[in-house]
Image 1 (cartoon, rainbow, N blue to C red):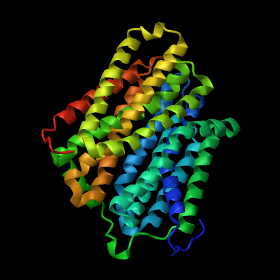
Image 2: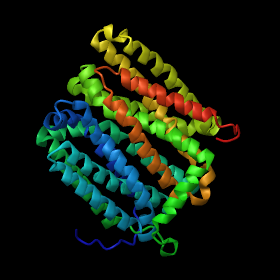
Image 3: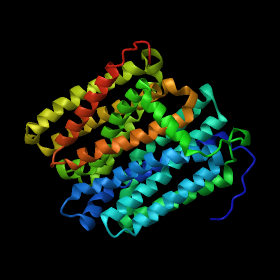
Image 4: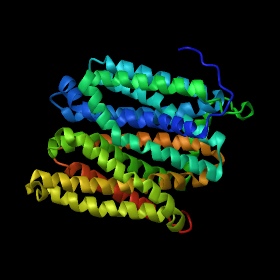
Length: 409
């Protein structure tokens, strides 16, 4: 890779926002764009058990969890530019290795590597925001970046479908490599190093282990870490199962990517709604209401689907019901993720950076343990997914209501 001398002039605000959004989007694009490829991967490697192709998604998420544990401390020691170079290097290596995979097991191994590298894009984007802004200014920048980022999960499956149509599913992994290289080159050519030398800390993974012990030993942090894991786990179960549910169970065919895009775009409004409501209602009441709604809505639909009542309806009606529920489900996630993370971090302000990485890593790893069995339970109907959402939401609600501090959140 050619050397790019670090620029010294700050980026214009608009370009900085676009660059940070591009960094954050790498992870989402690598997850959602692969959904249309799952049937082809299954046909090539595991035609006898196509549900296992979903592991391509959960393997990537597992990698992002592992990556957060060491790329965060690396970034605080060696700077944001070097951390991104390391991460994108791993991301590209994983993508190229996956492109050449000759078995599902090899593909999964390289997806873990790719996810490990992708963690740097999220960590560096957040770190740059913290370095350059604080307080309300940081919140404003974060909101603007999110408004661009929310578009990616909507358009990624459609983009993936188009790429696969031209160059096949292996070509999709080549596109990940090009994406990583282009974003890295943009960052290195235009973005100055934002970590001041006096703020650099020695690279010690032991600090991560100390923070991990403190997170697990702090009842409030542990409680909301588990809630975050349940919320993220059910979201990953949905994403992993989406292609099979829409196409195989509900007959959406190639229209699947458009339905997925519509659901994601509509539900993206929940993040903006949460920003307005949380100041008036509080984090915990909002999260509690969101999980309660899914216990009720998903519970009723799961019972009707598993009993065969909805299955007796025309397929078009079944699809419409599932899409309507999906909007409520994604909307619920927009009302929970930021709030639950903030509640988990509340008693850990003295180790905020490292604790954030630990909570992100552990919740990702636990989410994989939740999502994988739910996705593999696919039986030709949305029933197992809905049942998994009910169980996760009920457990999350129980944990939230078990917090006896009525002032918190």
